[in-house]
Length: 440
Image (cartoon, rainbow, N blue to C red; front, side, top):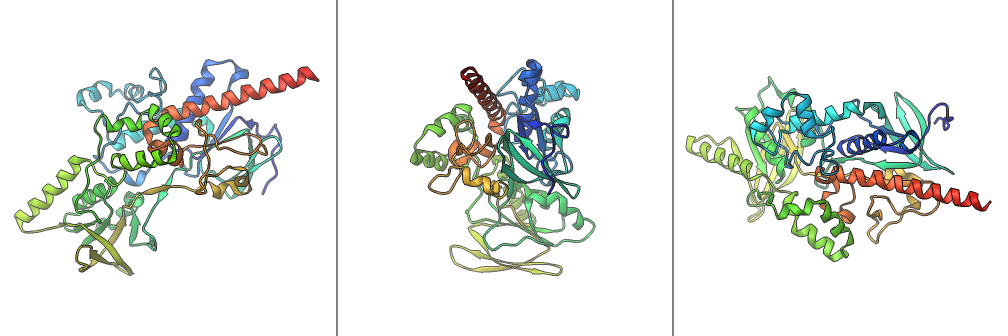
């Protein structure tokens, strides 16, 4: 592992971002807007490191025609700075589609279009991002953090006064399940499905009850018109997502303040009450579309879309040419064995574990009774005085900040709060140094 570089090789960054998905992209924009508004000494030096070779956000689920579940106004900036030239409307104007989008009369762009917006924004701050660069360790030094980054087979040390972790989500599968050649997670759907084109797949099994599961079922049913698609979930039917106006207040910036200040029992109560805004729920239009197809196939006498409700997977046996899936009907225990070409787990995602990167740094981080990181309102991890700067989390803070922890809804405001926290701590440290100098 290489030694720390000298000042001539690499500056000590004010902010070093780990990961460059939408959350840290929003932070890079917030920093860029700050730097454009102040003189040189007040600017923030930042660098972001991303393991992917280019910007990408769940590319494996960019299914044509699928739409966002949040309004375009909850983009990277608008909730924080409506006048920003990084807004979705500015993107539309730049792409010469503003009038067309207005005439479309929708608040919810397609996922493909929103991803293009994210790429457009990422290109504008590309000078602070280093792709193909994986952060593999974070160590506290005497005056700054030393961050080990692997790129092109070599590891180099970068220095920063503050580190912002935006590690994103990873696939979640049932306990004991193993992904493989014929057992996928929906995050890889579009990356892997091309291998089946031109062949003659006979059956797919999709496990999961949420939006991604329904979209995967819909996509496979449309894409492979000769194949049977079996949707397996333990509920009796898909549950509609609650996107009603009052329920959506749980995603408001003020709701984060309320949640953070609430006692633990109230936090859990709010999470339980509003899980149906985001978890294991499906847009009503898609539920009705899938039901309509099932009914029409019954009318035609050829059922190709099968809903195995109130059921769960009891056993999975990978085979050279597919996978055998045993599905148990929960009310009676009756088992149905399905020989499928592919089993797709659309069973959600979970935050990546920050402790893997923190290593010995983790001993300086405060935790609650359940072993979770104690995170301040400004998303700064509570630490001992041994650390030379701030550790911030973007994601993995649902237990402290509520349901918006890993969602786009609050990304613009959260990025501004993290930037302003870093600026405030820098100002406070400068005053302390000035005061100490005056006493010397």
